[in-house]
Structures are given as C-alpha cells and as structure tokens.
Length: 185
Image (tube, rainbow, N blue to C red; front, side, top):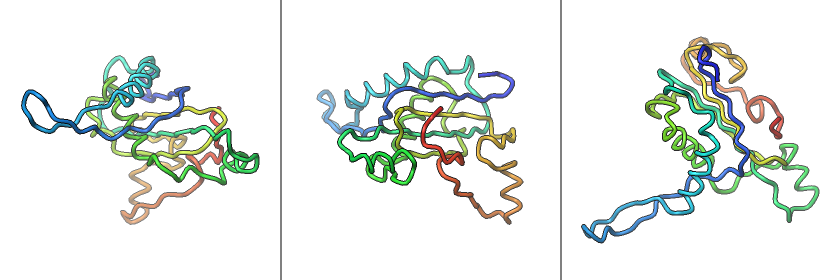
C-alpha cells in the first residue's frame, strides 16, 4: 500500500470460507443464553487474518471507504468437463449457499480486527461478487472513496454519477467487476 493513495489491494491465496452463524449456548455461571464463535469459524477467521496481516496499514484508514471483494471458488472435481468449462468462463455461477453477504462479513470482520479502519461503518460502498476459478482465492481492494478512481468501479466520480442520474442509483452490469474475466491474475 502506498500511504499517498490510501489504496490496498490483496490477493489472498486460500479457499474462501463464508462467515458461519453464531453458535448458541448457555453460560453455566449465569444460566443465561449467549452466542459464541464456533471452533471451525474461529480457525477460518484466524487463517484469513494471518494472510491479510501483511497488508494491514500502519494506521487505520480514516474517512469514507469503499470495499471490493471478489470471491473465487473452486470448481468441483466431480463436475463434468462441460460444467467445469461453463463455470470457468462465467456462464455457470455459484448461486447456492453460502450467500455472498456472509463472505463479505467474513472479510470485514477480519479487516476490523486487523485495524484496516477505525470502524466498519466507514465502508460506505461495497462491490462484491462470487464466481468459479481454477485458482481459489479472495481478491480484495480497499480505497478512499473521496478520490475518484475509474479503475475501481468503471464510473467517474460516484457523487457526480449519482447527481447526473437525478439522484437515482444506476449500476452498469459488466460481469465480475467489469472485467468479464473469472480467473484472477
């Protein structure tokens, strides 16, 4: 990351795992119900944190931020060659569970623990997608939203774009993050 641009780009070479639901239990000391993080979820989070830590900024980023999360999932070994090909060229999508928002929660919780920002409420724009790839990984970008960067969303300045559309929100659908490519580089 360069401190002058406040842009962080990460490729995390691990099979993406979505955040699991909290586990319910009874606190033996108080007798009250409580939610806790399961062991498998904790291991998944710790693995992701270990790989993301090298990218953490020296100081948390401030101000409004945008986050881009691309989830590249493995194709199943048991799939036919035709189905694998469709998945890799982007005509067959991972529409089953886990939901995309659970992947985003996993990333945001890890980034919060690593102090990429002071509070995750600073993330005011999220662009995310999940697709299949031969190289399973997370591709994550974090950027200061106050600085226009057409390479991030394919738009000019977000505020100007919004104003030009009369305040209505319009997004151009161009495939996975506008690239049309389902394999990370």
